[in-house]
Image (spheres, rainbow, N blue to C red):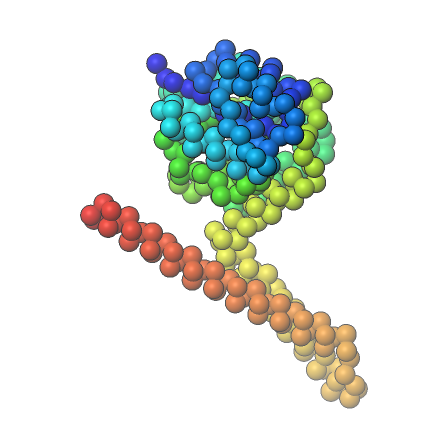
Length: 304
């Protein structure tokens, strides 16, 4: 019998947390809620209904809540963990669909996507556009295509949790986990899961959330591929600087007057190109050194 748990990061979800906990308890062995500094009765309600509650004294962010939940579920010896948002957008009745690929050893991570399979949810246009944009950034960072990188309903084989433990404390953890899973060669599968927006009201600023996710994804992309991320723009700026520099020199030779605009553009482009190029080389060198040290450490531990 496979032991399972539902992990619920929650912040000011007193309106919906009772429904989420009660429905989840029907399908798993444990329900754990991380009350991430809520100012309302979220934690108290979950605890009264029999859920285990991890309490943060102040709001630390979605990624920090996930990290706390991952650490706790591994202590319980649970084999599969399913994450749900505390706003009742996901139906726990689909937990069996989520864990099935892991039970049958077809996946290590399962993402419940609102854009595939039998999902019938109507995703708001602006939300869909934002998710698709983040999907493309995640593709660039991970090299793998995902249809819903922002889904909060996911299933994990608990033994791989240390490999994907997020360092991002905010919403950027959602994409970081997928990037880490891809880098580690873990099997990630998507399952179509409906999502409900009826009565849903986010407790976070959507603009701040979006910037957090985009910033975190760009950071991981820059670290993973510094030559591409910084080197390509560097070449563009250097070429731009050379072009406007030649133009400025030709104009000066012809008129004996210095065209300030052309000169400024040339110098600014050249400086920016040099800065980006230097950054690319430094990050690539540091990344190579770190990779070699990690490899040596692994060899020493394994005796190879």
